[in-house]
Length: 84
Image 1 (cartoon, one colour):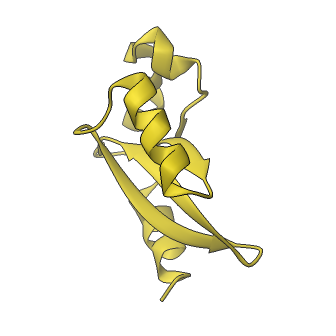
Image 2 (cartoon, rainbow, N blue to C red):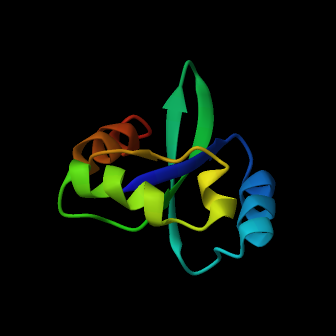
């Protein structure tokens, strides 16, 4: 998957989604870092981490500008497990 953003409030997440017109194209999950709850915004799933990295170049400029990065689904699941 590609991580697009990490924010500490759902209001900020919604503003980000509205700004980039992403409301039905992303997944959002909570995690905890240094005792603070964060909401992680991810975009699409890819079969391999390399395919996710390659996909960054194909994104619209508005999304490239937020510096997305590839993240394995294993990492996503570890981050989700932090809030359990």
